[in-house]
Amino acid sequence: MPETYPRIRHATAADVARILELARQYRDALGYVHPVALREHIHRRTVLVAEWYGNVWGFVDYHARRDGWQTIYHLAVDKHVTGQGIGRQLLYAVPCPMRLKVTTDNTANVFYAGAGMQLVATEAGKKRELNVYELRVLGIFCMGNGAGDTYPRIARESGLAYGTRSSERARAWPYMLDIDWRKHSAGKLTWQDYMQQVARYHPVQAMCVDYEHPGQRRQLYQQIRDLHAAGVLRIMVCPKFPGAVAHIPHWCIVAVSVPSSYAGFIPDSDELTGRRVHLLGGSPHAQRRWMLRMQGAGAKVVSFDGNSHEKKAQQMGWFDGAQWRVTGEQKTAPYESLCIDSGRNILRMMNAIHDVRQLGLEGIA
Image 1: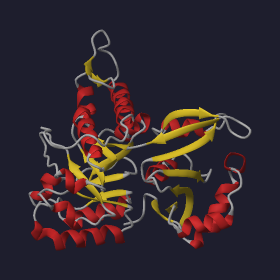
Image 2: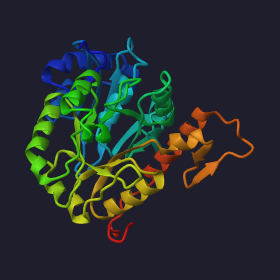
Image 3: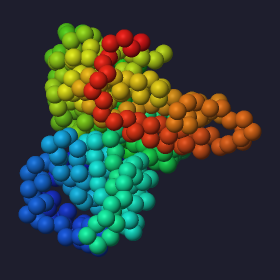
Image 4: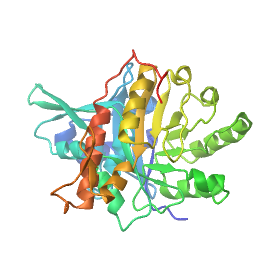
């Protein structure tokens, strides 16, 4: 199957010349990218590139701080391929929480704000004022089949990454490829089917089959190896029994299924301490509640996905950042506008949650 989407991967020493060439296209905005520093960052595995048909078309260079934050230094995409979503995919591939600074007169402000980065401050720089952007947790709008590029457009305008299930047709380059748990459990989809989709779409984030009992441990590790070999940067494992998290490699993300009508299982609080967590599905209120409790137990929620606001929009409802509302006199409000407004408000709400240590998981229904 021919490649139809780029692949995000760690840069190597062989990429230095091309990265410097890309940086020179934006000399005024990026400043001078020092080759020695670039090589050191590549050695530390904090430089990512977007490769497409054997050529590097974009890169992001960042610093992994000791406090867990990532500081983005440079991000650039070849001017001949802008508008393909490469810049966003590179940005979202940087682990959350992330932070960056850009001069207030830089056109990149439009890109970062549109990608969901939250403007948290403006401060004085050496020559010009700087806008400070943060993204504490990445939001993903996970939808598949639909008319044209409706779902990717809603994700893009909401400042969310786009994701889909392996059983559905992706309408754009998906950041996340989820597994259709029901079809897999029913035997209608196999692991080989899923890996074929991974090979086709090159998602940054993908997951193993739900880890439902200890007898699947060897199978789980083989799936992790398969995803790693396929170049997936964010490998997620969804635990479904007490004690399962201990079997998940620490460099993988623990995908917690938020209780809903679809599924749900929450590991014990001590299992999640010190782990990176992705929230699978659930309503915005449930995700916020569990994010607070998990971070209170010492976990770090780095991403979440959902599509409940799309279903509400079909009923002329939207999320205002605190509660669900239904249009009254605005019954002619466009469906897409309701989805986009809800998505922006959900992302803003989730990113407003600061680290909390005093709360635990006990007693939460």
